[in-house]
Image (cartoon, rainbow, N blue to C red; front, side, top):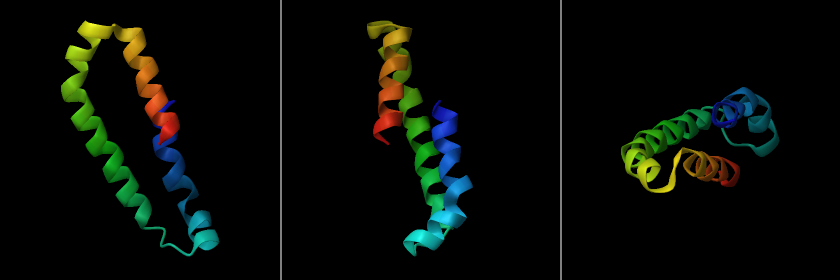
Length: 68
């Protein structure tokens, strides 16, 4: 689900650019933010998994995807 959320924006970027007036190349900024967030969150994931458990951490990650 997280991969689907990340690749939806670049796929829809050309049509979204026409509808919003923003350049389609801003989809690259979105992907950069996604990868930056993934790198930062992976640093904290080990201790979170130890503390909360793998299922709870997965649920929290999916919640962040939905909010994003």
